[in-house]
Every structure is written in structure tokens, then in C-alpha cells.
Image 1 (cartoon, rainbow, N blue to C red):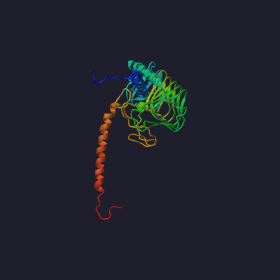
Image 2: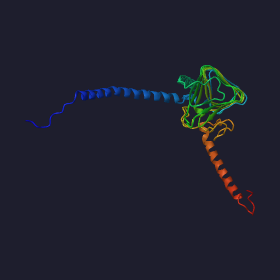
Image 3: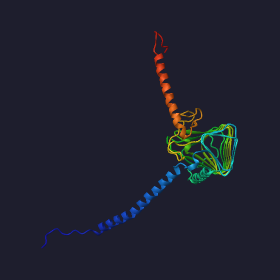
Length: 328
């Protein structure tokens, strides 16, 4: 007689439970993989939506037009001037960069502009821009106006929330218009090089407007008297009309292609001048082209040494030479 340990048999209930667990695991694994794939796709879409708009060979241009460029008065642009397929530039604006009229460089820049325009127009929207920008504050993202967009008075504020790579894209169905003496304010690290206005027809900047960002218009761009632009005026098919304007091309220092990723000097809060900011406007002070910043750097070093010398001199003069010299 075998008195050893009797073999143990699994109960039908236990077998069923194990089979159910295995089946559940087999079903859960594909669902988990699918969930991870969907999350990766969603994250990739979000990154694409928040990426800057690459301007390619159009990035060095302050002004790029299709039919003609006209100017009245003392307009200065820090970047290049381009025109294609037109050939007429009138009014002799001061161009501190190069001028390309219907040449290979201008043609390539126009092709890059078309690509950038289509990129900006195709981004998924994060919400409406409304019909009037006056008094509004926008966080990074894509805002859409189905028809025209107006800045009727005062200012509109773009708040980067401390992220120097924050991108602002405005998709405008027809026209963009600013009233006289209005302004676009950059706060909390927002940069002009990461602000884009994709305009379905024409853009008009009012007298004395302080504007920020790259305008990419399908048709005409007009900058009225004394309007200043920290960005670019890029018109696909029609004219760019200027009058006593200053246009400072905006490049993030880490990328002259206009694809963002660096830091530009902007004010820290609305109405207060930060380093390089303009007091009372919150906008960036015009920056020279990237290539000329070496000169400014040396100048800044000399100014720092002079300030230090003055502080040292004042410290010595503050010492009392007689009793009662301090007045409180």
C-alpha cells in the first residue's frame, strides 16, 4: 500500500479562474499597447501644434512682396528687402540688409513663404480670437478669426507664462486691421520671433501702431505713418506699402531660420520696461540683426565698466569730511 502523499487535483473552479485571468491578460495587452500608441500620437500632434513656424529662406527678410514695394518718407528696415515676381521698388527705403528684386534669392524666399503660410493655416485651432483684439490677453497657442480681425484701440497682450519658446499663431480668414496708436504687448518671456499672423487677404497697420510678429498675408500689407514692426511684413501676391516705418527683423538667437528656440529681450510685465523693453508699452525694443550683436556686446561691456567707475567714485565722495555732513 502506497502511503505517500496523495496527488493534488485542481478544482474546476480554480482552473476556470486561472483561464479567465489569462484570457483577461491577453485582452488587456493589446488595449494597453493601443492606448500607448494613441497617447504617443496625441503628444506628437500637440508638439506639432505648438512648434514655431519655420520661415526657411524668408527669415532674413523684413519685407517681401509679390507685385511691388512702395515707400514714402524715411523708412528703415534692419533685414532684407525682397520682391518677386514684381520688379518695382519706389521711394528708396533704407535697407540695412540686402535687396533682392526678382532674382533667385527672392524666388526661393517666396516659395518658403508659401510653405510657412500653409503651415500656419493648417494648424489645429485652440479657440477663437474673436473679432476685436482690444484688451484681450492670449496664452500660447493657435487662435482663429473666421473673417476679419481688428485691434480697435489700446493693446492686445501675448503672455508666454515664462516659456521663451511659446508660440502664438493667429489664423485670420480675411483682413487684419489695427487702429492708430495701438500696440501688441509681449509679457512673461514672449518673443516676437514666435508670433505669426496668417492673413487670408490684406493687413493694414494704423498710424503709430507698435506691432509685433511676422505678418504673412495672401495679398497686400500696408503700414501707415510711423507704424513700427518688430517682425516681418511678408506678402505673397501683392504689394507692401510703407510710410516712415521702422521694421526690425525678429530672430530667436539660437535660430536664424525663424524656427524659434532662443530668447529675445522682452518686457517682464505689461506697461513696465524690462531689459530692452519700451516703458509704457510692454513691447520689445527693436533689436539689431543677429550678425551685428557682437558690436553691441562690446559696447555694453564698456558701458558696464564706466558705470562701475562712477559707482566707485560716488562711494568715495559720500564719505563725510566734516561733522554733520550726513543729512539723513
